[in-house]
Length: 116
Image 1 (tube, rainbow, N blue to C red):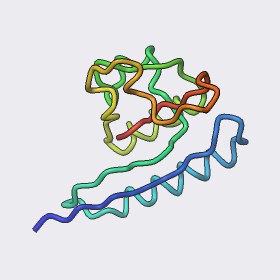
Image 2: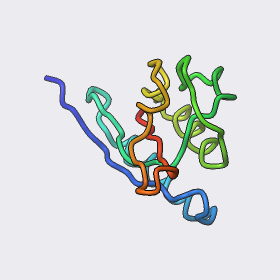
Image 3: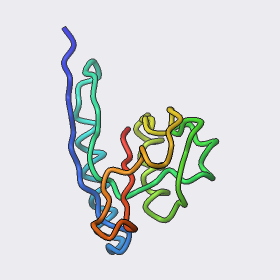
Image 4: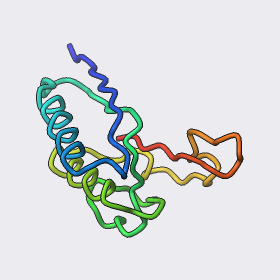
Protein backbone atom coordinates (compact mmCIF):
# COMPACT_ATOMS: atom_id res chain seq x y z
CA UNK A 1 0.00 0.00 0.00
CA UNK A 2 1.33 3.43 -0.97
CA UNK A 3 0.55 6.46 1.12
CA UNK A 4 0.56 10.07 0.02
CA UNK A 5 2.06 12.95 1.97
CA UNK A 6 1.35 16.59 1.20
CA UNK A 7 3.59 19.23 2.73
CA UNK A 8 2.35 22.82 2.62
CA UNK A 9 4.89 25.58 3.23
CA UNK A 10 5.19 29.35 3.14
CA UNK A 11 8.77 30.53 2.63
CA UNK A 12 10.28 33.80 3.80
CA UNK A 13 10.19 36.58 1.21
CA UNK A 14 13.32 37.83 -0.53
CA UNK A 15 13.67 40.70 1.96
CA UNK A 16 13.83 38.32 4.95
CA UNK A 17 17.19 37.93 6.65
CA UNK A 18 19.50 35.03 5.80
CA UNK A 19 18.94 33.30 9.15
CA UNK A 20 15.18 33.11 8.57
CA UNK A 21 15.73 31.66 5.09
CA UNK A 22 18.27 29.11 6.34
CA UNK A 23 15.98 28.07 9.22
CA UNK A 24 13.08 27.62 6.80
CA UNK A 25 15.03 25.34 4.45
CA UNK A 26 16.51 23.34 7.34
CA UNK A 27 13.01 22.74 8.73
CA UNK A 28 11.59 21.94 5.28
CA UNK A 29 14.47 19.52 4.56
CA UNK A 30 13.94 17.81 7.90
CA UNK A 31 10.24 17.42 7.13
CA UNK A 32 10.85 16.10 3.60
CA UNK A 33 13.45 13.62 4.85
CA UNK A 34 11.00 12.32 7.46
CA UNK A 35 8.56 11.19 4.75
CA UNK A 36 8.72 7.38 4.38
CA UNK A 37 10.57 6.34 1.20
CA UNK A 38 7.53 4.49 -0.16
CA UNK A 39 5.25 7.51 0.13
CA UNK A 40 4.35 9.65 -2.81
CA UNK A 41 4.77 13.21 -1.66
CA UNK A 42 4.23 16.72 -2.90
CA UNK A 43 5.38 20.03 -1.48
CA UNK A 44 2.98 22.89 -2.16
CA UNK A 45 2.93 26.47 -1.04
CA UNK A 46 4.12 29.97 -1.61
CA UNK A 47 7.86 29.51 -1.78
CA UNK A 48 8.57 33.07 -2.96
CA UNK A 49 10.79 31.90 -5.82
CA UNK A 50 10.97 31.59 -9.58
CA UNK A 51 13.18 29.03 -11.26
CA UNK A 52 14.99 31.65 -13.33
CA UNK A 53 15.67 31.17 -16.99
CA UNK A 54 19.41 30.65 -16.30
CA UNK A 55 18.57 27.41 -14.47
CA UNK A 56 17.54 25.47 -17.58
CA UNK A 57 20.42 23.00 -17.06
CA UNK A 58 19.66 22.39 -13.38
CA UNK A 59 18.51 18.76 -12.89
CA UNK A 60 15.46 19.84 -10.86
CA UNK A 61 14.21 22.23 -13.53
CA UNK A 62 12.34 21.21 -16.66
CA UNK A 63 12.65 22.72 -20.14
CA UNK A 64 10.40 25.72 -19.36
CA UNK A 65 11.90 27.77 -16.51
CA UNK A 66 10.69 31.31 -15.97
CA UNK A 67 11.46 34.59 -14.28
CA UNK A 68 14.57 36.33 -13.11
CA UNK A 69 16.27 34.38 -10.36
CA UNK A 70 17.47 35.82 -7.06
CA UNK A 71 18.93 34.56 -3.78
CA UNK A 72 15.68 32.73 -2.94
CA UNK A 73 15.81 30.94 -6.30
CA UNK A 74 19.34 29.72 -5.64
CA UNK A 75 18.40 28.43 -2.17
CA UNK A 76 15.29 26.73 -3.55
CA UNK A 77 17.15 24.98 -6.37
CA UNK A 78 19.86 23.82 -3.96
CA UNK A 79 17.10 22.41 -1.70
CA UNK A 80 15.48 20.63 -4.66
CA UNK A 81 18.79 19.17 -5.77
CA UNK A 82 19.71 17.89 -2.30
CA UNK A 83 16.30 16.27 -1.87
CA UNK A 84 15.87 14.86 -5.38
CA UNK A 85 12.86 17.04 -6.16
CA UNK A 86 11.67 18.44 -9.48
CA UNK A 87 10.00 21.80 -10.07
CA UNK A 88 6.77 20.63 -11.72
CA UNK A 89 5.77 24.03 -13.06
CA UNK A 90 8.89 24.06 -15.22
CA UNK A 91 8.04 20.86 -17.09
CA UNK A 92 5.02 22.26 -18.94
CA UNK A 93 4.85 25.05 -21.48
CA UNK A 94 2.44 27.73 -20.30
CA UNK A 95 1.64 31.27 -21.29
CA UNK A 96 2.75 33.79 -18.69
CA UNK A 97 -0.87 34.62 -17.88
CA UNK A 98 -1.33 31.03 -16.70
CA UNK A 99 1.67 31.23 -14.35
CA UNK A 100 0.13 33.92 -12.12
CA UNK A 101 -1.46 32.73 -8.90
CA UNK A 102 -2.21 36.21 -7.58
CA UNK A 103 -2.83 39.58 -9.23
CA UNK A 104 -3.21 42.76 -7.18
CA UNK A 105 -6.15 45.09 -7.63
CA UNK A 106 -3.74 47.52 -9.29
CA UNK A 107 -3.45 45.03 -12.19
CA UNK A 108 0.33 45.41 -12.20
CA UNK A 109 1.61 43.50 -9.16
CA UNK A 110 1.56 39.75 -9.83
CA UNK A 111 2.81 36.59 -8.14
CA UNK A 112 3.89 33.35 -9.83
CA UNK A 113 3.60 29.95 -8.25
CA UNK A 114 6.19 27.24 -7.92
CA UNK A 115 5.27 23.63 -7.34
CA UNK A 116 7.66 20.75 -6.90
